[in-house]
Amino acid sequence: MILQSVKMAWKSITSHKMRSFLTMLGIIIGIFALVVLVSLVDGASSTITDSVNSMGTNMISVSVADDHSRPIKMEDLQEIRDLSTVDEVAPSVNAQITATGAHGSETVMATGTTAGYADIENLTIDTGRFLMKPDVDNSSNVVVINAALATDVMGRTDVTGETIRLNGRNFLIVGVLKKNDSDSMMSAFTGQYAAYVPFPSLVRLSSMLSYDVTSFELSAAGDDTKAAQSDIEDYLLARFDNDDKAYTLFNMSQVADTMNTVMSTLSLLLGGIAAISLLVGGIGIMNMMLVSVTERTREIGLRKALGAEPRRIQIQFLMESILLSLIGGAIGIVFGLLIAFIGSSVLNTTFRISYGAIALGAGFSAAVGIIFGWMPAKRASELNPIDALRAD
Image (cartoon, rainbow, N blue to C red):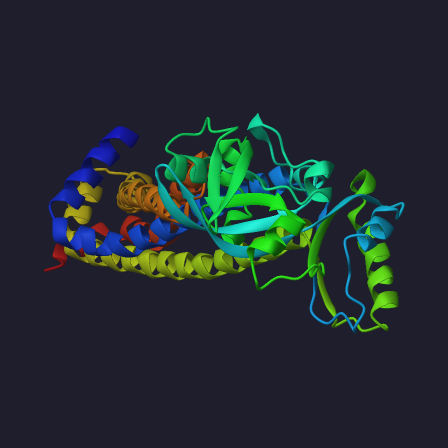
């Protein structure tokens, strides 16, 4: 009985192709929005989580806007390091420089820092080493670069021990980061290329910098970020005359929370579009099914006169509504996954085929077909055969 109802429903849909397509359009748009929403949000959330985890959720960044004539010096960072809630601390001062090698020249946002920076940022060295304490103490002309800079300026990544020119000065490359570290969340701030030099060496390279530490990063001991943040705020308030606007402080957990809030807002927006589209699509299906019942009144009367049960007629029209909705849902799912894939490539986020999104799309399609097809199917099953046969 079900198979026969499906065949008859398919025949009815294909006999009015344009009308059926226009009826499905609301379902297509609704399911399309739903699939894109779930796929992109899942992918973006996964990318954000991976980036934050790769950098460490225990990292805190501090920027000083007004030092109240009491600038933080390198030796002051030792006081912060001595706090029981702090594991490591390092300056993180940036300057735009020009890097020149055998293969070309690129503009780089260089970071002036110390040995502890690699542990705070969870940087992984591919070849060579990171900066060491003697490099900082001696203001050595050494540099650690990322894989992208090594490839585009030096022509390859195995360049440890070679010389690169930074703002016209020769620097010895002592290490190259692993490629995945070049694509971390910090690339949003530093750009595609990264170079790490001893803090005093970067001050010599850039006339825009001084030996005052205007920004630094630290890692919380035992991953207790809240305790570390509280202690560092107390330290800064005491230093800057209780002026909480003298500095800006944030941790990676806050960054992740902010990004997740943005994704949640986007989810609500696209979810609203999907819900409205599905509602419009459902009303369209109900309208078409009511028209179909009217057009086939004599057919329904004839079938009833020949002994067809009301239940069979109801199932046939309900099946037509469900099939119409499922076809629209299938089209929406295919286009949704395609756009989600393209969107993930453009946004440089992870794309994963979300089977949950597919199941959700199929489930919503079937539900819309049942809910909005029930009344027309019920009306068809309740038609009086004598009145139906008399209909024009």
